[in-house]
Length: 76
Image 1 (cartoon, one colour):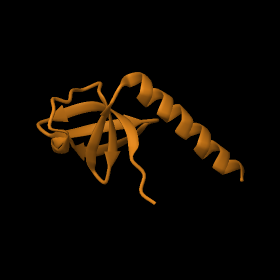
Image 2 (image 1 turned 135 degrees about the horizontal axis):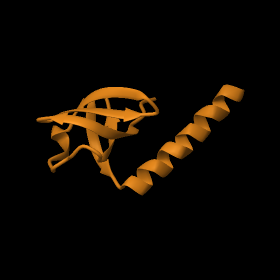
Image 3 (image 1 turned 180 degrees about the horizontal axis):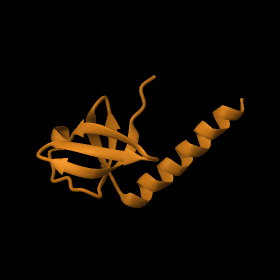
C-alpha cells in the first residue's frame, strides 16, 4: 500500500522543495500542483511529488491522527 504523507515545506528552489514532518525531511517536486507553493505550506507528498496542497488546520489534524494510528501499531 502506498501512502501520501502531509508535510510542511521548509525550503524551495524552483519546483524542488524539502518538506518535513516529525523531524523527517524529504525532497520532492511541486510541478504537479500547477499553483504557487511557498515555504510554510502543507502538501501531500507521494513518490517524490507534492500531489495536493492542504489547509494548515486540516494537515495538522491529519498528522495528529497518523501519529495516533502508528503509535497504536507499535503496541500490537
